[in-house]
Image (cartoon, rainbow, N blue to C red; front, side, top):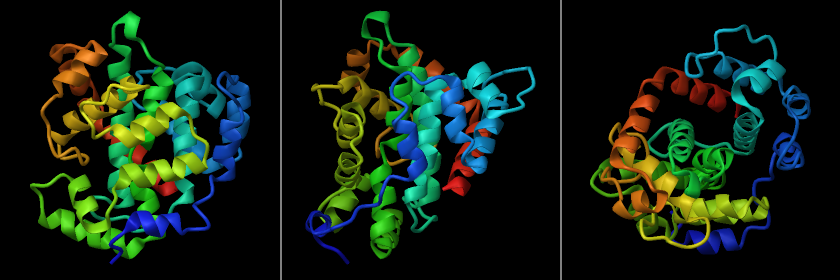
Length: 286
């Protein structure tokens, strides 16, 4: 068992490299065209197929026929959402490791998909004067637990031990168990990786601080969006928040009422079948 994960990672010479497709998506910049994005996603037929199936799901209520990834992007998803979804899915190809267990790859992907959808929906309900990027809200939700994927990839035996420990200590948040066992948690491992990948500061901050209800620094909107989503998903046993109480500080910071949040959560629960299918497809693609 590794008792000082920070020291182990500091000694690493190589981190998981960003997959080439994910790198190509990032190189498109902040305002790519639907055709430019489609041309890159089409390089991976499996990923393209998953995105088309997701766009055709009842989650979006599109009644027309979707014949191609270009249709899915331009008619249903929009470039921003499709870009973030494609990046998250292609980034997942960097990781191997245990799939089962409360922090295995399957659980991480399911939680990521739900958090991303919920964070984006919550962001859309924020007052105009506090509005944030909906695509960035989605991306921070999708990647906030990427540190668990890195842990399983680099130290699979430790992830298996962590799975067993979390199963036997249901009353403790997983970050407490991680720190007790490893001397660090997935917020640290995620930031270490994403810095190597030169990811935006908004994502780094959300990954690092999403278990900190009092965070008020730069990019706090994304931190609190992910945290509120995490707390809501704890109600249906998805994720690692360890607490399902809505954080007053977070709601105030986001300018959201409890009624807004509950309505958002219920809309996501109505789409569980579609989100589960998306998560399963992303796991297979990875």
